[in-house]
Image (tube, rainbow, N blue to C red; front, side, top):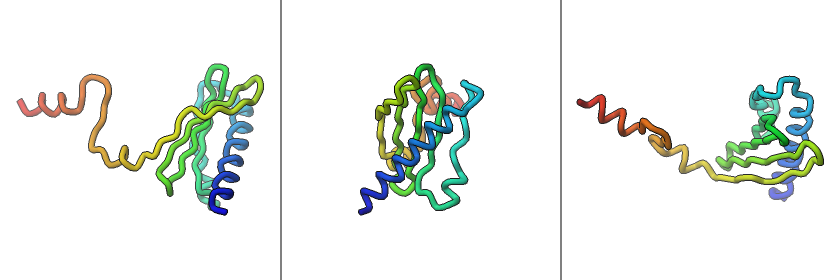
Length: 112
């Protein structure tokens, strides 16, 4: 039953995300995360970002600490899952930076 509920919520979020993305008038503008749906009792946060050829739908489940990213093809409506990740361990990291300067480099420079 819980799996069915989560599936239904995810499906509804995707439909809402697609509809919100199609009505967006500014193609480069990122709409905010839907806080009103969360306040109304929804367990998921969703955001839609228009990109070239597709809409990127991001779904965040704060209870499960999970993030999923989908692309929705604008021409045929096909939905493809791009990534799913449990972010529990990510949020416990003190720092992570893949570009220079690295946090450790900055810290070492300030010590001298």
